[in-house]
Length: 378
Ligand code: GLY
Figure 1 (cartoon, rainbow, N blue to C red):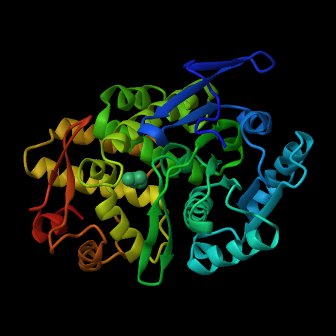
Figure 2: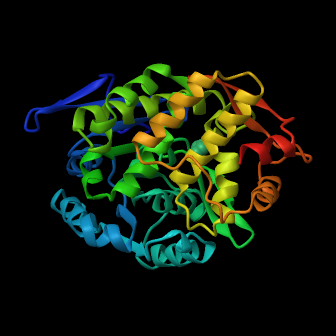
């Protein structure tokens, strides 16, 4: 399989039979650079594009039970129609509970049994759990085979499908086993988002607000002005906010692929957010927990006179408009949140890194936030 999927140098790809323009973002990582294509109807395009660059066994689509029923079988038909006669689909039960090493081993054994070899290609069709499992499996199967991300949730399109973090959970914590493995391409078909619930859309929007907060006041202002279009997935606005989010993530990942330092800014709101998620026994969705986390670090930032009260208020108001929670529910004990923060895998020699806000679009990473500051903020 060639390094690139043959998108050429054009920044936009026109398709005459669909009256829109697809957007392209490149993740610049030298030999491992890849393109993210964004737009409606892209999944239909994948088989013919693959045909130009791939003639190995498969490809093998990894998905979950929901996506398999929804579009998985159709997608396999498109692949077969394009001449990939031995294309197959492998699935596991939908949900974070499947994100474990047993699922990976089961899928690996199925791959061996259906003849996947070192030249095979995996396609991750689904949300974040599918992308993380498929990416991890691809990175270790026969010491590593290529994979492509086909994210079908907003959260996966703006975050988890980009940047090469893969992995599974263990009882001791989420994502504690994993690899960095970049996909060969990402096709974010925004048409697939129309089947998502409002809760799933909000989950992704929280990450988009994060990108505005850490890097781009223009994106933040766009969200303030077009919040209704964002919530209702108006195609042009959706394509533009997904593109901007991917550009920001691509820029950060290209500077610090393995999170030596700079990539940590992507964890804005996540240190407290993850701790709240865990304290709720994962009943609070990721995006909602991140929204609460962003507000909490916003308060800490205001307390340190880094962030103006006015900017903090803009954050709270924007999250409110999207129906995202800004307060941590009373049943979550602050002491437990604090304990979880200290157990986070990113804690180094007892020091917890917090990404604070210096204004909309600007951050600073500190490691001296006190327990009292956290408790006051939550
Ligand atoms: N989701 C954070 C990162 O990819 O680094």
